[in-house]
Length: 384
Ligand SMILES: *Cc1c(COP(=O)(O)O)cnc(C)c1O
Image (cartoon, rainbow, N blue to C red; front, top):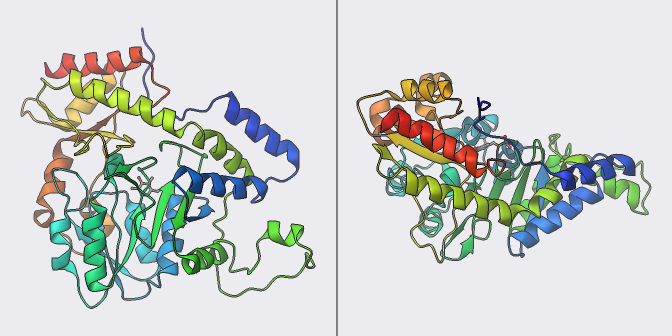
């Protein structure tokens, strides 16, 4: 009997283990040389010309980016309803209000055609999410942002690496792009994230606010020739710094990011080919295989049959030893968001319909070909 196949697992090798042990032995465990190196190599990975600010989660990074963009009390920020709650909660941290927009059923990303109609005097920013690792049309979003003088913060939690029209996500003219290194993401530091930006002022504000609003970080204090005890508080900041333990793990993972993406893509293509005859809506794909790259963080499907409900399907998969998930329960359905903003499902028909039938299949580099054969066989047993 095969063991239960979990929905997701991190891919941690001996390189990561040695790197973390080396950091533990080094005597410097919090933010220091490994974190600086991780930030530098992350920028190189995205093609250079950026500043990177490592943080202890993408949620922290999104919060810092919005704060640095000046989002505050009473402002509005446009977000998709089909995302994780972190995208919207950080807006509330600042006393501002998320304005939710339905998804485009062809991409599962924010429906760009609905953005302009939601812009008001209070609108300050747009936060697109590259759903599952498929890029939003950033040129279109940035054009709208320029027209209405709005800031753009990309939630790139799913998109390492993602490319559209030969441009890496991270390199568009947004104010900030925020990555996640949570355990299930395409690379992991356990918990962690990265803000990247082309704007030196924004980078500076994020760096100061990342660590208590201190004008110099601890590493700088202990290595520069100014007295180590002296620092100045210039704002009521946060405690969002990434540790060197996490960064050494991140450096080893980053070195594998391209290989991980290739393997994910190979697995996604196998699912797409071997599930194509079943009553399923398979995930949206890139428009142009030459110039676009899908990170394939998630493989989001929809049932296209009345014979079995989504909940029954997930139960049946579980009984066959396969873990699945749902990405996401749209925010307009979640009690807090629904009640606080009096949101109606009828106003989000695409995300509501998607959610009714949605499930995500396991897709991660620790899976073997045999694991994937089991997933496909289980689905065929239920649906064929
Ligand atoms: C995972 C995720 C986040 C939050 O990332 P953390 O690093 O866990 O804070 C934000 N947005 C989306 C879309 C995510 O999937």
